[in-house]
Image (tube, rainbow, N blue to C red; front, side, top):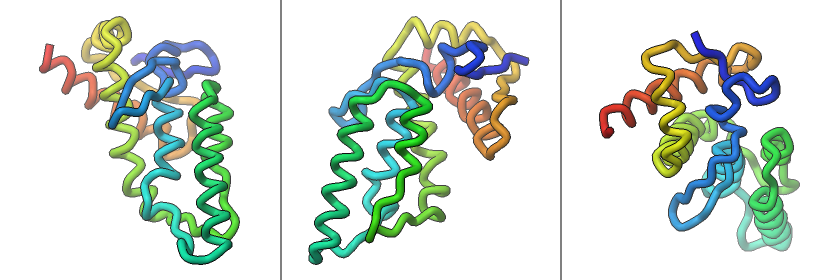
Amino acid sequence: MINIYYSTNENAELSNFAIRPFIINGVRYDSVEQYFQIMKFKIEAVYTYDKDSEEGRKSKEKIDSLIQKMQNTKSGSLLKKLGNTRIKNAKFNSGLWTQESQNVMREGIFESFKQNPPFLKKLLETGDATLTHNQDKSRWGKLFPKILMEVREQLKESQ
């Protein structure tokens, strides 16, 4: 078993907090966490607001400002905090985000390793070991390593 946890420097280079720049749809992201948190605000149906009202326009401005702030932030823990911001007069659809979040995480992990060969090498060097994220007691404690192992297999096959 190989545990991955950025805060304790356990295989931190494999973490979603690790600085591993990649590009998706022409936009550069510095880490998987940055991509993940920004996508909460970019997937249109996750946040809804009245686009025709003054309050809706203000909500859109706040969302755009928050995305810009996140794009200029490298700290994974700060990105996580910013991603939990709720916008006044905008409804956060947590059910939809729960559905979408796994695909967003998978895409970010896949692209970050695919576009960074030195980090891909480190991931592939884990072989068939079970990856863990023991410190995280949320659903991501199980999901993150599961997705990481799936991506490892996918990228191993393409080598």
